[in-house]
Amino acid sequence: MTEGTVAPAAGGLLPRKVVALGGGHGLAATLSALRHVVDDVTAVVTVADNGGSSGRLRDEFGVLPPGDLRMALAALCGDDDWGQTWAKVLQHRFAGNGEMHGHAVGNLLIVALWELLGEHVDGLAWVGRLLGARGRVLPMAITPMDITARVRGVDPADPERVDLVRGQVQVATTGGQLVGIQLDPEDPVACPEAVQAVREADWVVLGPGSWYTSVLPHLMVPELRRALVETDARVLVVLNLAEQAGETSGYAAEDHLAALLEHAPDLRIDTVLADPSTVPDRTVLEGTVASSGGELVLAEVRTSDGTPRHDAQLLAEACRAIMSRVTGSAAWQ
Image (cartoon, rainbow, N blue to C red; front, side, top):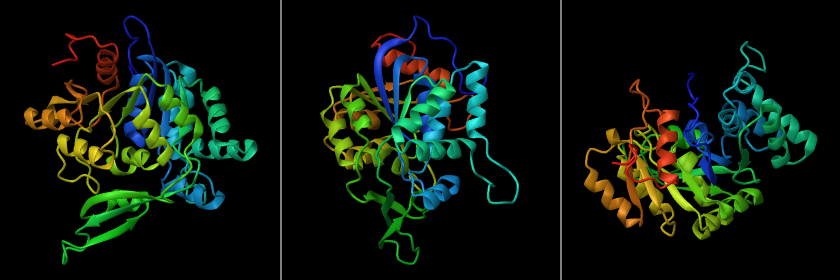
């Protein structure tokens, strides 16, 4: 089995509507698992990237950055030859030393369809049809935006000073300690289809991923945040496997959850999923989870090579146990 593929789920797909929010590799890991667990998956993707191919296309054409949307589409491709071939094509980056260097084929395809159709959601839907994607991909907002962060200790000579850092790449790679994030503009227009999907979902999944630049930004979009707070869906938070230099240096599992609750104290959380290897003191994490009104599930979801990556098969098994509420499963400890 190739990386990112999952064996067919016993008992078939669960009849659940699930919305997964995030961006980058973290969201891709979630989608790679969920498409084998439930029959209706929607990805809602952070669109604030300002670096690499996405940043160049954003600057040149004034469009949403397509990179994280591309990765989500690739993660929803099937495991057959068609799906895996198109996933590789979508992710392929041009080599060479010219202007095309570093551009991803999928980014160009998405922007081309946006230009032809004049609509973000329709363009992404057409790419999904071409790929045979098992789910749909939506941007969290239809307004171009930047992430800004308040960071303490950027200047080692003045460790208590708080500076404003602008741009997703800059925030993700900054020194110092992140205090909080904002979007610019502060009230970007949410994607209506994303808001509707959250309101109609059975489950909403937040994380894993770059906590401040991929996960928390969804809670900064006013209409989307309101939908997340008001939805009848159960909310599952999948915690990261390690701290991330530049964003969450020194963070333990409970610190990730505390940051989420600090930015959205009115968010109701039903379940928090963590790998046991990331929880040296279960009592501390259980206390933080309890303060959110949720329950803690510990399940082995890390890849066997020891890297801080989620294994698609194990994550699928854990999500299936949680979403089917099968207590006593091996995924529950």
